[in-house]
Length: 115
Length: 114
Image 1 (tube, rainbow over the protein chains, first blue to last red):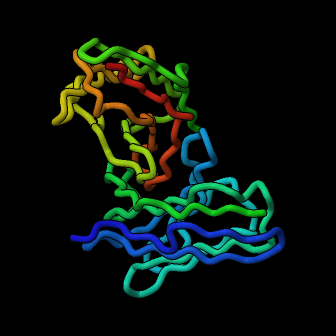
Image 2 (cartoon, helix red, strand yellow):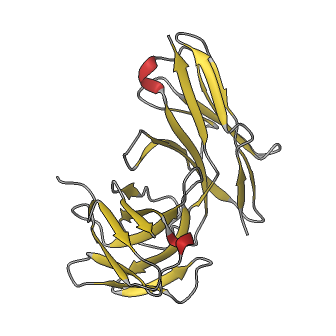
């Protein structure tokens, strides 16, 4: 079992550009959540996808959007990048939704640097 | 809305000494509680979780945490730490019956010194 995988590992972009990050969930999982972890801080919830729909969303602007594919993999898109978007972006997968007890398995993250 | 406080941003301890990492939370509804560990350049790994039942939960590598509802706390303890325990530790909560929107604390960096 490969666990949660994310690509790319590192990414450097300039302000105003757009970026797409990818995530493949752990085998058997159907729910994907995305988190932003700024340097020295805890992860902050961006949104969650289940059955190809956004089910929950944190306090992030519409510049952050996502998608889930039929195979449960997911993409995170960020438009009009700002310097403050520089962070580690974590993908977490789990089974089912509506149950806060389900453990989330995290990927290694994508380190985004905006110059 | 929920929030998590980890009062200690850094905790240095000597090897084989005991350690306690503090976590307090705020929520208007019942929650589940989690501790995750993050080693350098890695993602988060679940250390232990409290869902229901016994308020004392244990991990396979010697950590334990106790849920205290009256004090809204979920402190993490280990009686004897090892160098390999050096990492960032995050406390998190999620609301019961409301999906998996985890709210994380700011983290505590545990440094185990030889």
